[in-house]
Image 1 (cartoon, rainbow, N blue to C red):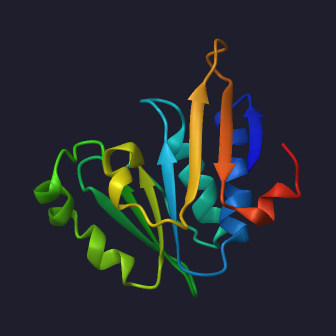
Image 2 (image 1 turned 45 degrees about the vertical axis):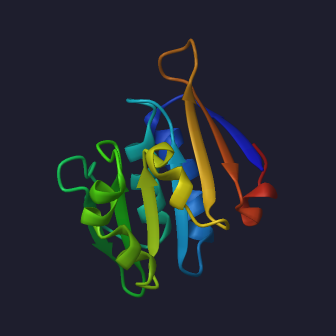
Amino acid sequence: MAIYKTESAAETEKIGFLLGKSISRPQVVAMFGELGAGKTAFTRGFAKGMGIDSDVSSPTFALVNEYRGKDKTLYHFDMYRISGWDDLYSTGYFDYLDEGAVLIIEWSENIEAVLPENCIRVEITKTENPNERNIEIIGAEALENIGG
């Protein structure tokens, strides 16, 4: 487990970048955090760390955005409006798990029962300072050595 404190969206992106850079195989990254916590900012950095040069935006209405790099693909899910099995199946989530790609999922608390056991968990919480965030990452051993 690694814990970071960031004081800007750019710093949150940097932590995302470090995690994205450490990903070398298909993986699910489950993100937890309230509205406005910085999940999409983290994902922007994450995509850059994977070598993906795309404009990353929240997939709130599309439910999933696809970003492709030279040799890696990232599927960015937003599970905010998922409230049951039918909703979840309609996203194609289970099919994407078999794609051999990386999935990063905002609002993972809504699908926690079906997250893979070996997923990386990222919890972003706001503090009293409006720009500050605490980011806890569980399951990414490569990041534990860089400190928090």
